[in-house]
Image (cartoon, rainbow, N blue to C red; front, side, top):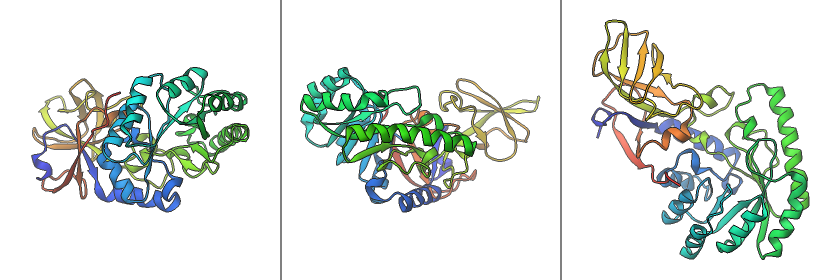
Length: 338
């Protein structure tokens, strides 16, 4: 199949960029020093490419991701880096016997949920500055004691400095990282364990405390991360088709809000022109001459929620606007849902 045969809107992955991104990160964070976060790409098929690069441990955001990875034979060491009270589904996952499961906990309630669900290993989730999940660093030691008291093995701590992932000011990022690292380091001193898990694509180089980096977006990148001075390139594109051209000087594409996430802003247009708006099924573009039937590429501003809107992504040797490029492979996006 060639790109010209793909129904739009559709996701394209540039295989050259994808391979280079993986190689660069693998050289810096080989093996288990990287725990790729599958929430970024939601595909066990793509995850297998990371296994081939030496990364067998994975990080998940939902139980559905955990279930899908285990079913795909990728359950050597899975971390649910999120809180859950769904003991029933945890138990089914554990009883399946195909995955080593560790769960993040930050309260007595999540500890009990893990225990009832048959989970034997946990990480104490610590709030290191992002207003999301995690206990106060001063509470981590006591929480670890409570987890051990009910028979859980506390492998260590985790903390996510998500508030710094897109901080472009180097001085502010460095200062923020110092504060976050200190909080996690303090918590780990009280908790113990061999694992310090955290970080992400935006802090991949500056977080030298963690024993495993939870980066995921680096594999394909997006325009939000592209604003950073990172050595990874954008490899994900939304392929669209011009379905209408107006005498008023604009064209309309067949992909809009239902094919693109907008939480980090609008997509960027590949080639000359600019984005006017994104509506449910349409994106308006202006500043160039298009004809009905032309193919137009967009770069998503945030890949995680964009990918979750699609069922597959197509691997292409080099993404371009020409329709004669062969499709190397098609990867199901099989880890969507909750």
